[in-house]
Image (cartoon, rainbow, N blue to C red):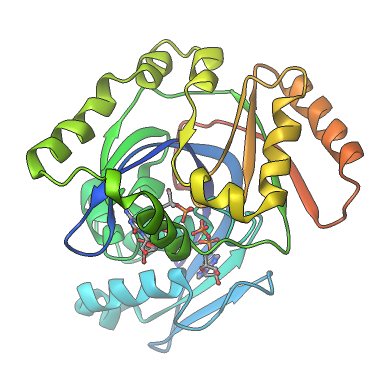
Length: 317
Ligand SMILES: C[C@@](CO)(OP(=O)(O)O)[C@H](O)COP(=O)(O)OP(=O)(O)OC[C@H]1O[C@@H](n2ccc(N)nc2=O)[C@H](O)[C@@H]1O
Ligand SMILES: Nc1ncnc2c1ncn2[C@@H]1O[C@H](COP(=O)(O)OP(=O)(O)O)[C@@H](O)[C@H]1O
């Protein structure tokens, strides 16, 4: 095979708790990550010269070596120089459907797809955990994007424990096209404002991180109880993003007042806000109501649902 087409799903954060500082400057997290049906489509194929090329259908996605997909390919060439010499360079096409800089892990899932695609192209036979380990060097959310589904993520976000799959909880996503929130800004501001409540003792930190496993939301996920899950949604980063971005706060408030919404929350560092529903019909109806309430063309709305997988191969030739 010389070419693979991959499906690269986005994620939402059902739970995000910032529990402390890390010596590497990052934050110690306790999260629950969930793959969703909204996905990018990534083609990866071998080319005869030894270069990496990236194409994209989206003006905001860089095509140089700052693209996370490019970085993933570069990492593979460094890690597996013999396979690189044997199979040559890689051309990557990104069909971007996931809003950019949205808190939906768009770049991370593209990087995960390239790792999976090159593993197949070069017949490396890497295991899922080897792919996740490589992914962790590219970004905190990349390991989750490889396997996807529903998982607890601790450490920087790269230490994963799978949870029972949550299928078919319906979701409306809302994002203003022109609104971007910088992830480093969100974490830095959180540290400045709330860092005095961080856990400092390493043992206490480990205990808090493991406590997420017995938390109420995890119990609700085990029961696949969408209503209970929705009541336990949490995201510490809302504490800094909502006051700084009134449009995000407004979306949260509009969703909270719609009939059929089980719960609503901002995803990751934002600015996407999501709402959960029992049925697709309810989700479609609320999408219409929000569109009527906010006639701004800048607002993008998507109906999607929870899914049980990460990167998938769609076809190969
Ligand atoms: C907030 C979250 C929640 O899932 O997602 P997004 O909103 O980006 O989708 C993640 O923690 C983001 O993951 P990701 O975007 O992969 O992060 P990275 O590239 O590793 O880091 C970007 C920046 O975020 C901050 N960062 C990230 C992870 C972490 N545990 N602590 C941090 O302080 C650091 O300032 C870092 O420079
Ligand atoms: N493959 C990619 N897809 C999207 N954005 C990318 C990609 N590679 C690099 N970027 C850059 O990463 C930044 C964060 O984008 P993205 O990964 O979509 O957001 P988030 O980290 O909030 O989920 C963007 O500003 C964009 O310029």
